[in-house]
Length: 517
Image 1 (spheres, one colour):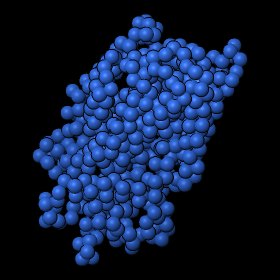
Image 2 (cartoon, rainbow, N blue to C red; image 1 turned 180 degrees about the horizontal axis):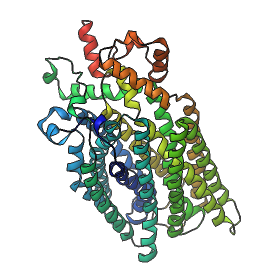
Image 3 (tube, helix red, strand yellow; image 1 turned 90 degrees about the vertical axis):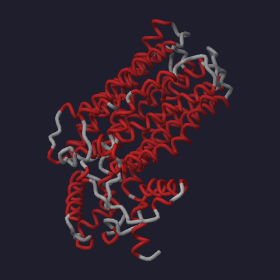
Image 4 (cartoon, one colour; image 1 turned 120 degrees about the vertical axis):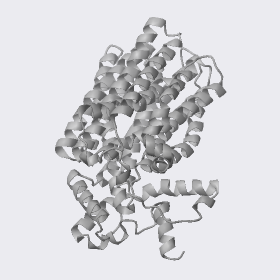
């Protein structure tokens, strides 16, 4: 059995193993976000609406699989397999050979149903691996700085993978020709090989919370095994929705949606915008996108430095939002500019927006690693899995929403699949979606950030109170000053902490039992 996490030293290879795994998270998402809809409409004969419908249907499936995976992962330690291989790492291990499914998504010339099945299939595999993975930083350490480094390593590696998701297809297109769909297939093969190697490293060089540290707050319920499948799913969704009862998580989700929906909309529109609105080739689109992702790498580093030194995630978030917004405006300015300076404007805008996007992508995931601690003082449970399930579902749902809306608006404006040119109505739609869609969600996240209160000092106080509660301290004995701080983070007063509430199905069952309901 693993030694207690507080006694294990985190070394550079642990940070690297954890961080590199975002080649799967960010890399596959970036390649999909930037190119898959374009691939569907250019090489597969699908309309923009059909392509976007694939993403939307997958999200309906994900509404079940993500929270279910979170619940299964949280409770898998009760099984013999979970005790042997770990409640998180078992799913990482069995996901390794299934990574090959990613290649199937990029075979051209198939029909709608083929692309639907291959996309949904890989999405389920992605969820099975990423939900347990996303809990590991929280499980490996309680230290604020170490978690910040874990989050930074993850986003740094993720931005590198995103850079290659833009760069590699462009180079393959330049060699094989713009009309050769195998450029994307070969790119997918390269990424899949990387996914497999990286997950092997993740399995061997990370650890999870030992069984001895898992707080067992199960309620004695003799009817538990008699519950129907529908009732069990009801329990899952009680836990899923209960995450939004945590004040810090509600604010965090708004910030998360603000930065990621804006990026998803930008990514989905970007290739169409460069090719059809500005009249450049897909190779140029790839080159400029590579500049964006290259700047994102620098942006992640700047974000890490700002958060670790200033310990103020919200302030850094707002600066990053402004950078991304200014860069986006620059792309729109390029459309209305003289053709001689368009490329210069594009490069400058790519750098500015990339710096903002890099920091912006890092901060919500850094914040996320501290949310289960706020939840623990409310519920008395460690629920990293269910929060990871909500985050994974939210991430993929927002991307699907962006793709679906882009597809519907494109078809509505008269978009012609497989055509080399588009009407002025399509071009104007692209410009409006790039500007309004991106900036509107950035504004939402910017406003929400003023409500986020978690800092390093407050986190240390929170952990101290959690430890004392574990040792038998009663919630009502928490000082008024600390109680006010905890309420500001959680939304609950001290008399409702440590399971004295109806948050989550475990607390709800306990409440009903104690009150005879």
